[in-house]
Image (cartoon, rainbow, N blue to C red; front, side):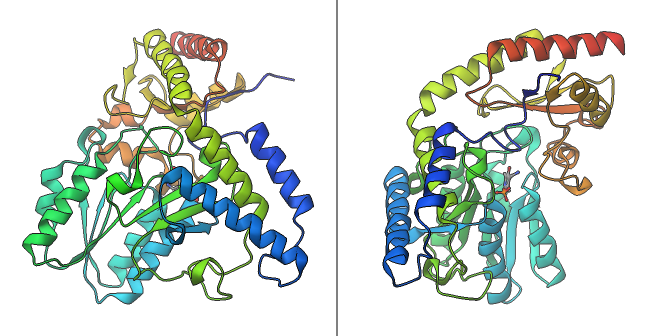
Length: 379
Ligand code: PMP
């Protein structure tokens, strides 16, 4: 059987040994529903509370700010959905490099009569002055991502929040909800939610070696309401029986990733630099400055992304031709790259290589060689 070399960690990471062991242990030991009042229910509830406490300690945020969800798409949806129905056709600002779980909501908002401003992100960066220009008296929601999932650019969210807060003060303290999709950031780049100053943020366990289908929402805005209806779990913000093994396993994965953030970043930077050097004859789309070392987007120019990635799959390499969250064309990276003002010739041939701390130098060398050979063969 062909050896698989995995370079698609921005799409999903492989669960860590610890996260897997914890998942299995919790699933087999904590059999009760955390809402049940018998001994097994109480045991499960205590485990859930402990997981929330641990996560809050890790992120230095109060307990009531965390809602466990089914992933980042759902965390984003809770914020958007809540405001879509509550407010009377106001104004929302997003960037045009947001994930589809945001852009699709904004499409719905437009249909419902919201005014939408989509800010450009030339080269992958949102400019403070562009946000300033977009703010209006009707603006109620600003949503700008922390780390982009296609090229890895990191936004200065703190400065962007400051811009919004300054505007609010000038307007007499009107409240604008600032949301950030921080899915590609946790355990990869250091940040503090409190310092960012956002009202809410979305996270997903499977991006930091936790299980799939579990994530969380950080939220300090009391106006945010639940997406669905049911029992009062998660303070009513996310009804439904909690995914206890997933949640506890996610928190362990988060502790591991955040605890080793500097060590892992150093390793990944070496791999990233190695590939940039070996592939220096190609156009690199991911910038060096203010960019996550976990994502490297390059353009081959020779062949369309889909063709090139398939050739790499045939050689056992898993990379991505777009954002790879789905096969849906709308979610592919090409649209995001176009909005970053990457020329179409480059965007069409772009491939996203993404790493984890498990990526080895040997794997990176093998990928560089495979790409070089394919380019020579199809020159
Ligand atoms: N936002 C970003 C930036 C992402 O990269 C992803 C995952 N591709 C999501 C949201 C959606 O996360 P989930 O798979 O947990 O719904």
